[in-house]
Amino acid sequence: MSEKMVLGTTRVPLEIGPGLTQFEMALTHQRAASPTSRLFLNFEKMISADQNTSDFSVYLNLPENAAPEKYPELFAGTLPMFGLYESSLKGAHHQGLGLYKRLEVTQLLNRLTALSSWNSKTLTVSLVPLTTLKGTIHVDRITLTAD
Image (cartoon, rainbow, N blue to C red):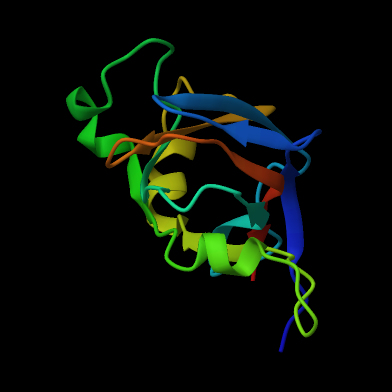
């Protein structure tokens, strides 16, 4: 198995709340070493004390204050939150480290990097809850990796 190459990462932990959450990820490499690499957004150590969480639609490079439904070409996929509350609980046999999720974004990033408007220094990631989110979700780190 080949080693993962980290192409970008968030600088600080994030809080995802009700409504649209947007953040910028600093890109550290222009592109994966191999053009055949698969690209993934990795959501690490997601924790919530709220039982009423929501799945999220994920968009890449959505313009600021834009209505996500007007940009279906920027949709990266759905980030499921099934089991988030349970994985966040600390117990005798569980550390409460939360969920780790991975979303493949190869095709979308290949299209985005071909555009003249592509910014090779940052990637904007937008999370839109699919249902009403009452609390917040803590995300320790989000990375972009190539496998």
